[in-house]
Length: 491
Image (cartoon, rainbow, N blue to C red; front, side):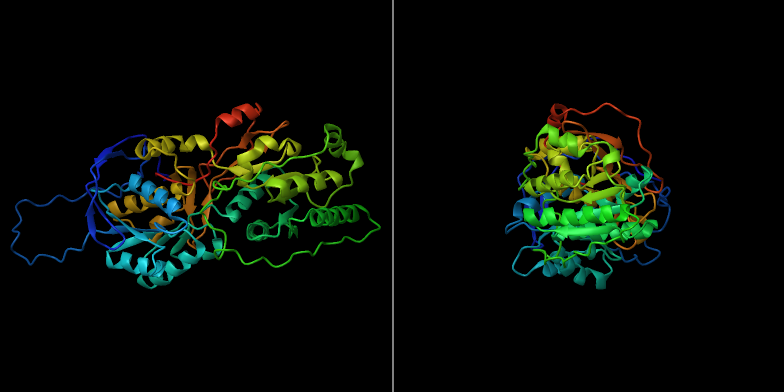
């Protein structure tokens, strides 16, 4: 059964908390409003009542285990302290002080390192650990928790950290690609290609596309990686276009681009969930120097364009690089109805400037689902939550509910129906990966977007295109800001 979100609100005082050193400390009394989203998991049955007539001294008292606790490992000092603080605040909304289970918070940025923080969590009796933030820290924490068989809900978006017992809660490029491929197949598209930046993010998108196509039984996708140099973008796009022309000509052998340089070393051992929508360094909206006439010419009738060996093209650029990619697409006549352009969630932040890509699709969470959580967080902390703070809330809410019901097991964590989180449905897979229900948005003429495939409420069922036709205007999209893409949950 999928557990639903409850709109109920509660209040509580916060008289006591544990610091990262395992010591208790009093905090100034204040009242916070618990998030209006609570984990409500299906009860397993009634509780047996104590036989009041029983002789309490007839048998030795059984050994009573200490109540299970939840550990949170995030950076509270150092360059990512502000992010860690917001994640701690979100977790406190789900697991307030004074209520069970207790939440222990540890600083992953202390000199002793994240592995030491994980060891402290074990010594405190924590039966599940939430965090840490980055891929490198996740690996360090897992090295401690795995031998103790304590599950870890990490906030990184580096899917290479996923393994049994270590779940990647961050929104990964692979999750976005899976949703796009699913939507493209629903639209009748079966042959995919990709033109991606030669970065860790671009390679993660490419690897996700290859894996998803393989699992779906589709052809191996044609993937080309490019640098930020405008000449390289132009040449690589021409390479892709020449492959198109060659495939269209029966007298010319099909050529397959092979420019796939090795991925550079990412700064923190892989993409992290610190800033999934470039919140602190938002990408500049792409600008185009082309005239409306040029744009019209680039989308001329299909009769002037050769048939193509792919019907969907995945892009991953933002900012000025995306502007260069768009110009290259126009120059090579690849912006046609024959080819569905697909893009990442990053486009959500500036889709009002993407009119040249009208008809393109990107994935995103439905922000209306998140509005209650945002309001509660703002009321409690007088500032909006960052996207990754949602990961902390969802993880804490899930851990708390399972502990209260004595169901903190791998079977419960990975139940097939998943859980409803702040941003919609998600499912923890046994291999540590996650499935997320993402909506599909289409760029409309003039910029802006409309949702055409809502996020599913059943990750086991195929999606269906909606018949909705009203286009969202750029002005309407502006009113929705700030655009934050978080993740998950109160079940």
